[in-house]
Length: 416
Image (tube, rainbow, N blue to C red; front, side, top):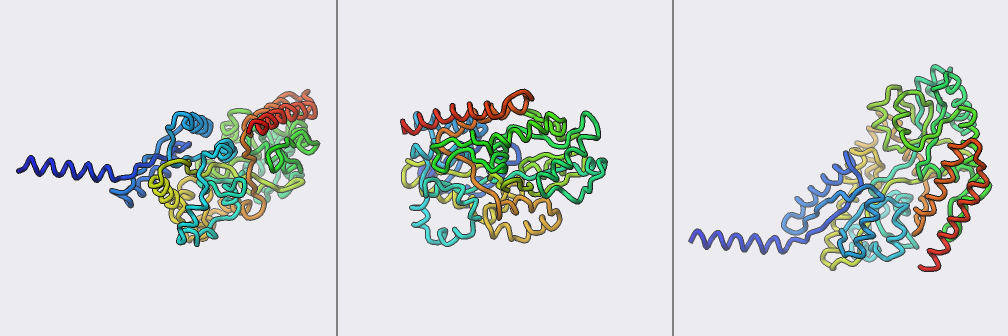
């Protein structure tokens, strides 16, 4: 009788397990960022025990994840949800690999009624060709950090950050005069910052339809020339790698980094950290960085519906707030932003408010079109040559890179 009971229990357990819809989520970050994703997945599994079970899988960094998804499109080994950095997603959207979400939203009136609770600029950041393809996950903007200790040593007011680029350069020159190893500003070749510098100079990187390269314009060239001049005179320093380490020496007066760096710098920098919005130049545009959560198309209906439940769970005000507070990224929900927890944080430390000021006024999406990463590599190479070789001709370098990038675009769209 006991053996029969054991067999029956095993059969019942197997039948229950067979009834569980199993999902996989690929994520592309480590440390506290991945832990937040893992924790949310664990809570989802508890909530849907016996019905849906999600396994979060680290898929490598942003580039690795993109390659893995592209390989999976051939092999069929694909997750249900994936975290993709937004400037890399174009090929997946163009190839129809990403689930368009409007049909799922239209069939979910309760969720549809909450759509106005998302920050419009973050939600628009996941719209491609007029269709919603994802939801914000780990979004940020860059902000301007400054070393208050160096400000004081240079005779500057540490409570008065620069409000214009002219003021930023003035401050940088005062700071760099403190010694040969001290620099007033650090510039690097991070993708979103190159885009921002070009925008701020009044230029564009690529046309809105993704078919015309624009970074060969006088405005874009002027952005590179501006920093080459500052580096040549010793006011600024260029880093391709090791920028964060250099910041932590205390010898850099001003630097532009992600708002996600704020908590780290406050906790670890050997100087008092100032932070503010990025001052406008010709324009004040700043990029929305980070990644979004996308659903892979083509899974069976039951799995797609289960993945939709998981995607909704990630976007609840509670989980959006939780992710933001634990990682330093922005919350995507307006109600979460206005929560007592978030407001108390910003009341206690106003430095955490600056990224939201950008979000409300000047933040914009980054280029995303199919071959953009190849296009960007060409632009980055030109940028690095100009800012590491003081004899490099910015006009010649950028015009050459723009010609090569246009060929990449033309070939892509011809074969699309």
